[in-house]
Image 1 (spheres, rainbow, N blue to C red):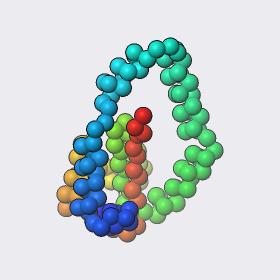
Image 2: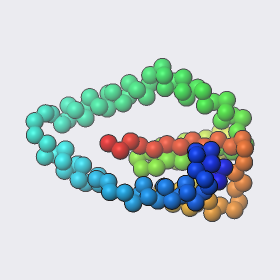
Image 3: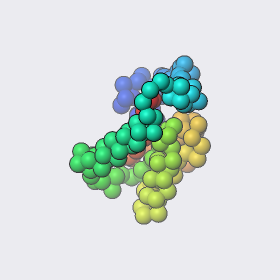
Image 4: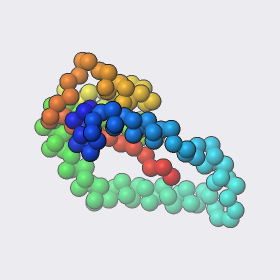
Length: 145
């Protein structure tokens, strides 16, 4: 984790962790407030907007750019010593599924973490795992809005 933190431009793990904790403590509008605001919004057909957004998301996922991005990950993942798949917020289930299915096919998939709220602590506290050069981290996180 220290090497990852330094590669991301932090002085060390503690600065990286502090920044992560600060972002979790920041004032964000919760899901319930967002849903209520959408429900009270004047005009427009909310269902049509959701349908349109879903189609745009599907088009993005199945675009040639996304296929190129996914294919660019194949060789590094196959060559990796270990593969960690982490997901936060709405992407936790996708990351968990990737590690679950990947572990069925490949020995180098590590199924961490088991609790979505304790990702940093679980990875840092794991004495059984040795993070090293040549490992691959798949990190997924949903947008804020």
